[in-house]
Length: 383
Image 1 (cartoon, one colour):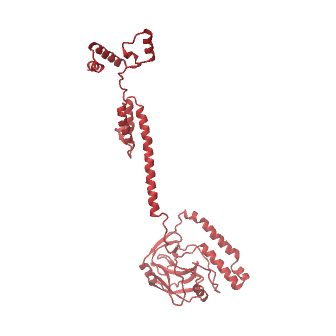
Image 2: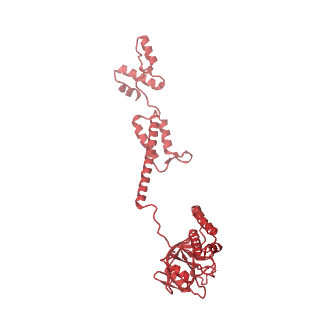
Image 3: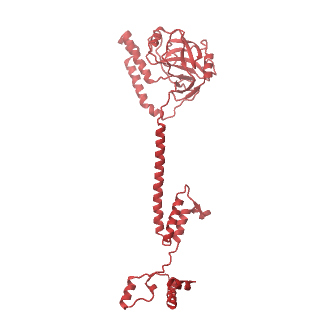
């Protein structure tokens, strides 16, 4: 986790960790309360395990450039007091070579924890530049996660490659290129740099798979929680919601318009539906279509959508009786040929119902006999 630029002045404490929620480099997130960190400070005992000062987060806490003498909880975080600090390393820290420090802890249930039940400090890592050349110390090696170890940092392969590149350049300036080629060959540094680039390219693919390690077995690398910038502002969110409502309304309106045209065409095609009823029939079909769920009617096997049954009813309506006079070309021609008009107007209607034609004739006869209009004669005949 990022801190202020560290200083290794003798006996001056370093703040290495703060309470709060921290996200691991492996993706795991843990919350640490002030009581958790106070317990860590109280449990620390160099006689059981003395935490070293290291560069990065090496496998076996080596090489060590100093040691943590004691821990104290103050001002909202853990303060570590350094001791036996390597002079060259202290100079580099004082010069600002390491901008960040981080802490690595044993988890409370780690089999390697010297004080089970609390987070115990394993080491303090310095990040941001190359490690100093200290004779007699092994070169650091970096390994995969260890069981029960929680490491908080901002370390990655790019930092690793940069560190070794800087260390090689330092060797060249201090001991010459021949010595540097022997200790840190250029091709190995290039391999690390290439690997770092490959990691960046593969990050997106790896992020798509859920590779979170178990909280008790993985060695998560943690960093300070960074504020996440919202990808959508409140104004943009409101605009998107308004557009969505508008598009939804427009789609519903277009669908309703299309259904209305379909209903009008259907009703216009039903000969038994009087013109005065068509508007009501269309409105009824529109209303049924607008319901959120299909309205059903009937019981058992006869149960069917009410819209379908209403249409079937309209289609079954009989055509209304036409009492007007319908002339045909043939009948008119016949009348012209004989020079006389047809005395029964009903004969000009083709395909008429015989029963209705008989009624029409009776009405016409009643009109002639009683010298009345058609309506009065129809009332008298059909009563």
